[in-house]
Amino acid sequence: MKLKLLLTTFLISVVLVGCGQDEEATTGDMDVKEVVNDYSTDEITEGSASITAEELIIQDENGQEKTYDLPKDEFFVSIAPFVNQTHPCTNHSLTGCQGEMVEETFSVHIEDQDGQVIVDDEVKTFKNGFFDLWLPRDKTYNVTIKHGDKVVEQEISTFESDGTCITTMQLS
Image (cartoon, rainbow, N blue to C red; front, side):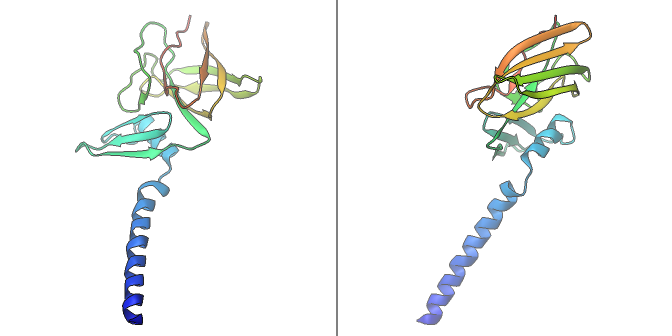
């Protein structure tokens, strides 16, 4: 009887460990921010990827979809400043959205509502015309973008209901 109980306990343990390792391999070992960057910079070109306020969604060539949780304290936003052309967008497609100003350098200044500077740097857009940021969640920010003699200012926020794709920042 003891042997049967030991074998049963052992088999349950093996199954639980196996499930835990499988879960670990698909989510725990993956650096979501690195994967997002690899899609944005065309380091990963297979399949498609999009990103919401809460998760990264990757679809392989066979249509299989996997989702990965984003960091709990950081919010992803991708911004495509423009002069003439834009597109409506809520959640950024890392493999589909295309902005007007490709591989251009911008001066970006972002402050939170308390006046704390979050970003004050030169930023270059990727081949898709966007630049990516990870900002603290659940806040409102004042964003100023300059390019040559053109400037745009806009308020954005990083709450769960906010989109990750900003295509409304027209330089003038």
